[in-house]
Image: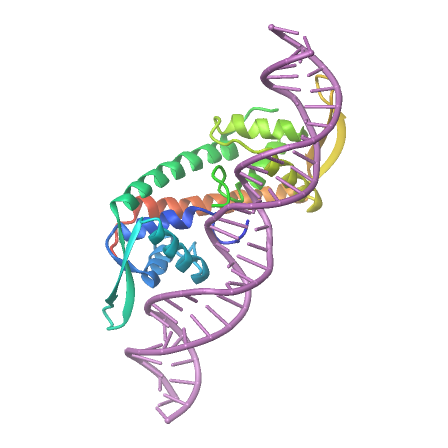
Length: 112
Length: 112
DNA sequence: CCTCTATACCTAGATCATTTACATATCATT
DNA sequence: AATGATATGTAAATGATCTAGGTATAGAGG
């Protein structure tokens, strides 16, 4: 694959899921993904920030500047209603996909 | 993503799994994937054949010409021992990955 | 004061699997 | 003879992700 860490397409879904809990800035989104996958997924900045800009352009996310707990400026992202619908459909697609692949990988018993 | 059908990287794994049941020619591998994912995954020719050539170069697959049941010539692919190891590690990676992502998507309850 | 780490943002260029789209040919059925 | 399924293949475009850098602030330890 283009990368060795992420299966392409999952980053978008994870970002949308992260901000579904409330506004987050980019760095925190990366941290959220790392923590909520038990460190299994390390999101690179070169993938994360372009992905955020993509999603903002697609209007799945709104952005605004704010201040962090530690007094630093950061760009916060909020899920739009369009983004929430998108998240829903991406989760569905993910579930259907993984179910199908896992079945082929583990349960298939027929020979060609 | 680059494609709309496959999460990048899964095709290789599915091919290796398909030929783990015995020698298959390319067209049959495509059919195997479609059938064993309940039609959820449609493998395109432009992805399948280059993938087979890639894996043959990496020596995960051996290839030889043979004759199908219907008397037609076809190139058959056989899993090498190296390919079998690869399949094993890719399945492991797939399982760990999907577990991590599914957890983040469905079970995460912490806020940022 | 200095350095190091973590935080926080950004982009250019390369990688490369997959898609789109096409070309070729045989075989069976209509 | 026309069509659809079988069977293989390639060329060009797409586009998400990685590599590899850059800037800057805050806090801790020396």
